[in-house]
Structures are given as C-alpha cells and as structure tokens.
Image (cartoon, rainbow, N blue to C red; front, side, top):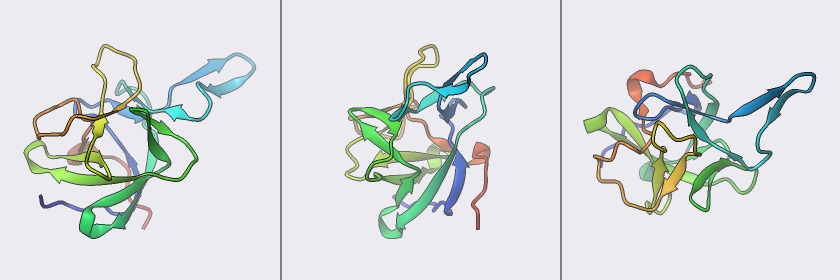
Length: 150
C-alpha cells in the first residue's frame, strides 16, 4: 500500500464523520478546568463544535509508515494519553476514502470511533481494517487542520 507521508507537526485529528478527537473536561465554578478523569486520559470523538486537541505527529520509520502520535497508547482496547513509554502507530493514507488510517505497530488493530450517539472513548479495534469500515477515525486530508511546526 502506497502512502502519503505526514510532515512532523501538530494536527487536529477528526473521525471520518467529522467529530474531533479531544479530551472532555468539566468546569466547576471557582475551581477552573478540571480534566476528567486524570491521567491516563481517554481520547473521545467529540462533536464538531468542540475545539480539537493538537496532537504531535512524528515520523519514526518512513519505510514502515511508523509514527509516534503525542503520548497516545492503546490501554486495553481504548485510546488514552498516558505518559509512559510512547507507542508507535502506522499511519497510512487510504485513497478510496481520502483519509488516513491509524493502526497499531503490529497492524493488529486500528483506531475506532464509537457511534455518533454514544459518549464513549475512542477505541483500538482488534478487527483488521478492510478499507470500508467507516468507524475508524480517519483524518480527512481536506479537513486536517494545523500545520507542521517546520
């Protein structure tokens, strides 16, 4: 599979249906913003109206399309930000969907967005991707905001 490489930098990541990947928060009067829950922080696919989280994307091994994406790791099937040994992700362009697919380094799972009507964290599905499953949060090239810091 040929792939269009991403430049190192910060990106807003969106699901195929346009939801933004971010961390939910609760504002309590007098206390300021409180991140819920504390680390590890689950990543959610939030409605378009929310501000997307900037995720730092760094190419590690070009020949394998292997990237590190901020401090995102698969924690038992859910995608979380956790300051541990960083996980590396295979990020490949899927021309048929004009989007990027994010898979685990061993290609055994892919990021999977929950249904639009469910408030659940983004998962890491163990089922292989066949190019037609629109649950996978693929970053659409046309709506990928942010630019590399280079």
